[in-house]
Image (cartoon, rainbow, N blue to C red):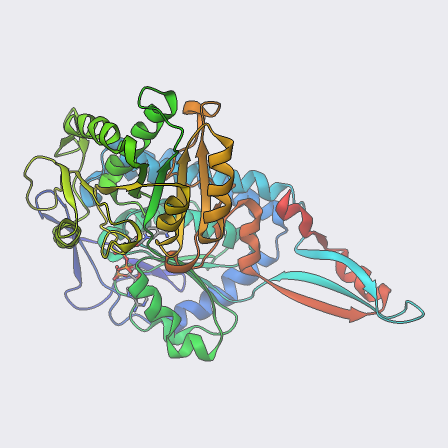
Length: 517
Ligand code: NAP
């Protein structure tokens, strides 16, 4: 049996006890075992802070950016191993795994090239210095300095590769060491990537650690110098936010939680138009890619009442052509959910949705971790009890007809804070008020008109240069957004002193304007 070891305090370590099994979702076969029991997590954090943090902060931004580039190189060389683990442990076929693996490599490369722009600086100035005295001999300057603790990155099961590196890129570039805590179910891929990077000897000692299995008492040992970046369910997020030690130390926390994202088809769209076809293509793609296990996936489709019938017909025709099964087999479009427990949870969620919806499509009968696409229709708009609240983490979406733009805005807002909405329209008089009406409750809005056509990067795809995260139930977090990500790993301080002192401190700094350029 493979023991997927932890890398903590600069050494590979096995947890005690039986541990937890990692399984193949299709046949339940046990592939490996993980355990964090008995590990000294206080020591792991101390080691990361002391060795990893100081090692990284000795380097300037450009040198750290070069580390990211080397990491991307190692991962690219070993990518075939990662595809194999993805298939075995997550049931992800080549296309689904590519979003995770190639997405991770692309994000690292993007940060490597963005980070270079910051040159040899080790800190950032924010704004100009300003005088606080009549003579000008006493002034103030805001700075951003890297935090001196560890970045604890707790992730969900659905992106074991990308979710580590999209967070780690910003942390390492800022000079913070990373302790990765992937979701247990799919941690093998994360661990393998970390192992390859450690073996390549790229990073300063202690800059990268990984634990595989339960978080144990990790949060008890964090202090005011550390940060937590969390992705996962709203329930776990609430437990982390209210953890007594994190509250006592005011530990900075970023939360990316679940979200009831919408696709909104405009009132101007005709069934035979290009924009209609673009909407159909994207909705089906979002339902089926990674079997709908994406926090950004389209869950609600808002459509003008007159277009609901044609849209349903077009979606059903495409969904009917999607084969569900073993992604290693030719022609299979929808692979399994990550395990049977997730499939059970998805089935329970769909039953609740069905209780207030009409069924438009339900795919072939499935069992175990397989889950066929389901398309529902709900005419209750903002009054729907479950459709606006329950995130079924699988290939499931609900059509929601609306009467006018005000109702479309109200339904989208009823998601109470979402990661992303996509809008399909060629009519500025629809697009402008709609975007303005929903923007404050969304992290990202993607507008597809006939000028954009097929060039868009996708409703669910997270681009490293664009902000990821949403308000309200989506967690209230912000990740990525290019160099904006560095804000989370730096602390703002205003230093007051003589211009001579401030200039000396600023000599090692670069303007934070570059974070937004
Ligand atoms: P989850 O059950 O909330 O777990 C997320 C992570 O938290 C896992 O690593 C889990 O470890 C860990 N965890 C659980 N309890 C903890 C505790 N008390 N202290 C510290 N860590 C703890 O979520 P999931 O089932 O893996 O992922 C699915 C959910 O994530 C969906 O709701 C989805 O929408 C959301 N998600 C959001 C985003 C986004 O960017 N907004 C992206 C992907 C997924 P164990 O696995 O060991 O329990």
